[in-house]
Image 1 (cartoon, rainbow, N blue to C red):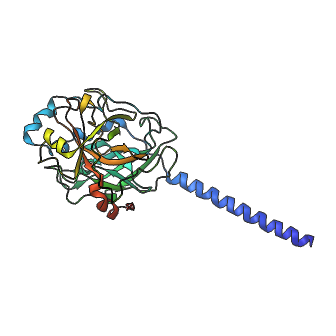
Image 2 (image 1 turned 135 degrees about the vertical axis):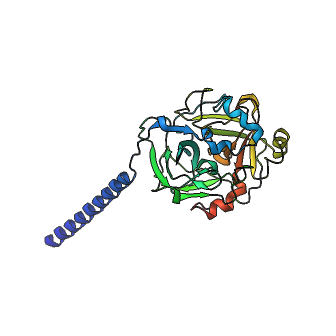
Image 3 (image 1 turned 30 degrees about the vertical axis):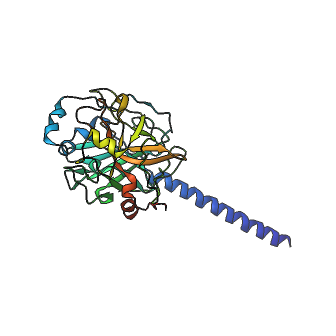
Length: 317
């Protein structure tokens, strides 16, 4: 009887040790797979400094490229660490350099961003890149950060993306390895399929790492600003029907508050039982970010079926 008890205890002990060893190996594998990616920030420029960004705009606006307008999330403020756990910094490598954009965590495998952040011209994909999740200061090796690479094979831009009239400016990117969700890294919520709201009158918040001075570097820390979401009719009155379509949503530029260079691809959210992403930063006035013109976004609800079909995101009813 004692021998049996001893054998049973030994068997239970062995099983426990094996389970703990397996758990440790899994944990070590997860750490090893999340390999740290060092970045030379001196070689990174806002995507708005690339030729393909300006090539999207009408000829009469090209003159503003050399006039150095205000390039920042204008009249915004620094976020508290972890305030936007879905915010990412997206670095895309092109033949002409590395471009900085924003984006949001869609699932543990995919991020959501603008097509012009990962495409040069109409069809040339970025060769590779890095998504940085969990960052407050992207220039610092923060323990909360996860830096995961991607290749051109992981890029899915909307097939109808047209840089000439800035249509369908949306893309999803599959990362080389899964994101590990933490208190500082969480997926964003998107509207459900049956949600037909236009969100006009809601307070919209845009966040990102855009520039904070007219000619200085992009912000190392997450910045944000808020303003009312506009109806499309009101936005068309400030822009025109050629640029503003049902696939767009606009944020008021009142008070000079706006998204700007370095913020492309980032999320526009409203509060509706928590943060709900309704837009992806697409474009603003080439005359400057703080002149009061509405900033324009790809409307997420317009693209739910496409997002669902091109990622492992499951749109809610």
